[in-house]
Length: 450
Image (cartoon, rainbow, N blue to C red; front, top):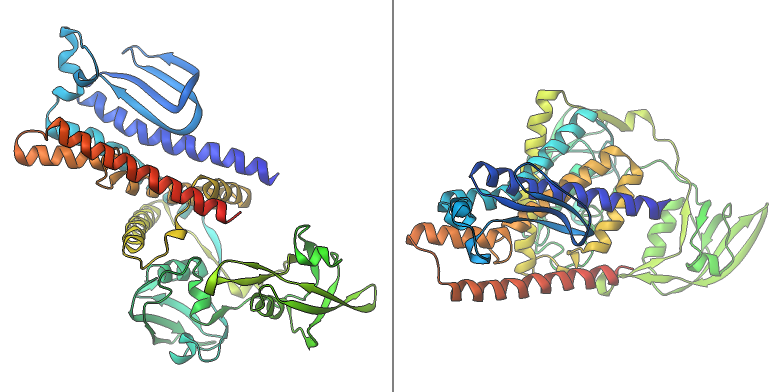
């Protein structure tokens, strides 16, 4: 079923986002008097095609990795005299800018629509209450302690842990003061805490913002009883089975499941002894933990999962907005994610954020499947994030992308005449090289995560 969700989720995501992006170009082009020859969703051999009364050919093609809108243009072939005025190249600079910018803008509008719907749909969130604080950590130095609830990060209210994580991600690779407002246990009084950052998680491949502060979120106690075992993991190879209760690791008793997780992660590639109970009988088994990640990010992996438990009602909150409030929340989310995406690209460029955080089609497909499987709200959020990424990336001033064309037209607007075809040709070659390079890097990152 997971594979089916991944396939269907990816096809829906690409289909919706590409169609909306290209429709933005198409809609504005029509209103500027440009004749659209073809509107294609996908590349390659057409699977379905039809024509409208304006003569535009609509195509759904076999390779669902993008799309395009082909317009009448004298630079691409002969144009009948009676249609010259409907050519893209004959339109004013302002009209051409509007047509090119309409695609990315359509993606931002689509993200706003999704966020608005999710805001009205509502969601149940876990209150960001601190479960434990690691000794000698940034959190302990700042005076944070178990039982406090994080009410705001850098002035932004945090209704759940996802909001906390999002605000922390914005500070990756930075130095300075991280401002937190926390609610004391069983109190409505907020206190301010300052965490001092110094090149925080700069260049880390797979950053864990909350964990790196030394904070462990509160969660119900999970008994260390195996609910599932990865057939490719060390636990399975050692003969552990679902239903086994883990009692001790290397002779040290295990308090709960989180205790096991913390100790396993600290021992990548190490040989350990686990004591477990099966059918009332205690046994010992020796195994060597697998490892994930590289360098400082290496962590141990056992290959086993635990059964979830019910959360106390007081640790959950329902977040829901009305239609008008939802619009404001959608705009806020769209703006925040757009800024975060652009800021992350800047940090990657300057080495503050590892380029290994760049994801390609394989990761996108996995996330699409996981979000589709977890529910409508999560899937719509994923579509909104992906739509924003598509919009931001297309606005980058790189020839071949919409942003590159906008750059050429803005220069033409200022100069009063277009750049020479030779200069534009050089720009296109550089742009193609950059885009291919980034795509290959993203694909390599995807493959390294398999």
